[in-house]
Image (cartoon, rainbow, N blue to C red; front, side, top):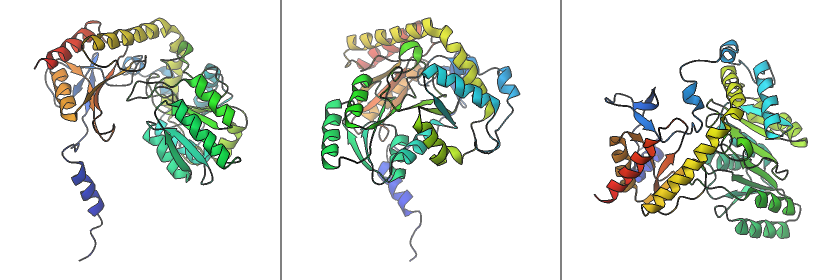
Length: 388
């Protein structure tokens, strides 16, 4: 009998049952909410997307003049003919906003992370990554051929021990440390000042993924790497608080020259679509005027955490707009998701393999534009679910 070339896929799907996802859900914007494809009745109020400042929703009905003028696609890589004036304007604006000398634009955050780690590390390098780092970062390390060690989540004592041992064993070895400033499934943040200090002490290059923090955390929403010279590389995405699409890598000095010469994911990929660059530019210019709203959003996040504790839940860690409610059992999480949808709220149940076994949760995302009474509905629905 010939070998079945699809056996690996059948076996993997069989192991995944009964948690198998049959298909993606399709949602259409509808007023302040989202309506599932084919669903009837009122739309669901969105407590799941990463549009923290409501900029994507605000731009959904109309394109900015800059986006229209920019044209459709860029047609080539940035090193051929793909770099447009709007790209250059956006790079300069992002560099000034973040206090960085050079910014590279990518079509997606996933591509930026894979491309970046693949060029910063090699098979002689050791990469130490937070255990809960995004899959794209880990995939980039794998592509580089580097050895990977994963330190306990936000445990800088564990990182310090590993860095010390690595330096003792191979004093000249290149060390790269990878973390995030706001972990999207945990709502947690590291002590970035101490993290940067550790990397400086042991001569390690520090990469910080600020995808979920930019626009929301740090001084004026500039992220937690702002003003930290020990953070060598900042990654950011435009599809979250900036309400657009695409991503950037921001660096200083020699790293800018190095990435331009050697980063294949930048050199050999069609440049970010100009309309996305134009929309990102327009939204970036709006950010300073949204500072009161940003502070209100963070205050609401603190309030929700307090109310969840009052319901008997463990306090969700962190202080940003991602508020995970740890449930544990994935069937319970899915039942709560359905119950919340019946109440008109779209709250995603996150389950394995996205999170470890026994760590299923509801991922609540607070966003500008959610009516004040929506938090009451959320809390009351969770309370009712406890008494069923």
